Amino acid sequence: MSKFQFRAYNAKGALEDKVIEGESAAAVHAELTRRGYRVVGLRPARGGWSWVYRELPTFFGVSTADLVLFSRQLSTFLKVGVPITDAIRLLRSGARSGAFKAALDDVNDDLDEGESFSVAISHHPKVFNQLYVDMVRAAEYSGSLDKVLIQIASYLQRQDTALKKIRSAMIYPAVILTLAVVVCGVLIVVVLPNFVSLFDEFHAQLPLPTKILIVLGSFAQAWRGRSSRQWSSSSYPHSSACRPGEDASSGTTR
Image 1: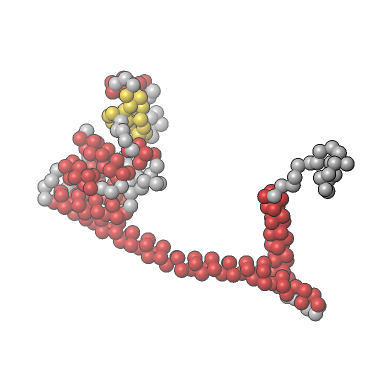
Image 2: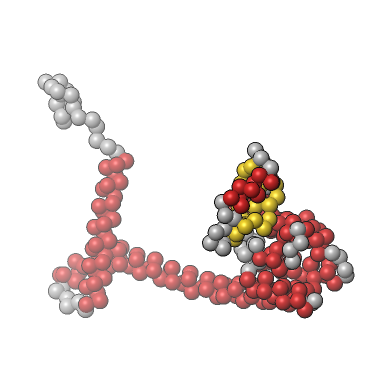
């Protein structure tokens, strides 16, 4: 039995891209047709780690920098007259991401089967988003794919730069907020309970916020003490029960 990767529309009209076992491509095609699929692509499944990259895109994803570099280089190749399949094959060999290599392999196979570039990349929404696909489709109609790829690369680069600035701007407030929470926790749990006896001694009339903080501190201390006792009892279990006739305190036999 051999493994084949197929791309087909199911009875509900949804596109599926999966791997199936069969005796031959013809047998697999017949089986899929019998199940109600409309097959649009069928080829022997690749070995190696390509299936891992497809199934775990979260861990083997494609960065924006990779996509920007690919778009710029592909535009350059097309501008000097290199066929798109040859250009993608060259760019695939220099790609750093395994997921990107697997996607470009599929794109090249689809191009060899007669699909357009926009249709080929639309099968990989985790790599090429809908905006990328739509812009490429419009460029194919207008015959300006090389120019549009440069525009896409510039847009993606600006978007990535803006996101990095937003993340950097959020780091400082997040650190300050974390430190503030830690300091408040130390004050409530450690410092404030030391003043409770002083307040009681002078019968001080405390404002409501202070009373709430004292209650929170007492609750936290009680919870911490209970957790410590439970941990101690689990870490140092008592000795097993004494045998009959043995004194429980001294362990001597009566």
